[in-house]
Length: 84
Image (tube, rainbow, N blue to C red; front, side, top):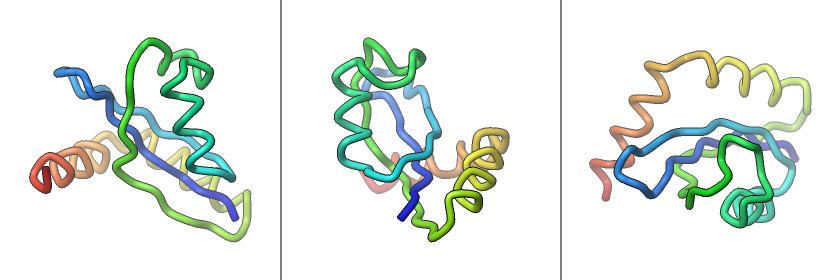
């Protein structure tokens, strides 16, 4: 399986990050241990969204769309903030 996910930082700025992986738990651990993407280093992260895909190509297309769609990212952040 392939996953597209969105993280938000635990700091007050609530930065967001969108990525692709085949193992959500391992990837989140990498981000939180500063071994993930360069942008995520030095911050602690929460996973607020993930979606599963059967094909890698579908997941990568959706990852790109989510990375570019700032309105959708904002809605996901607001939904998470309301729930917590």
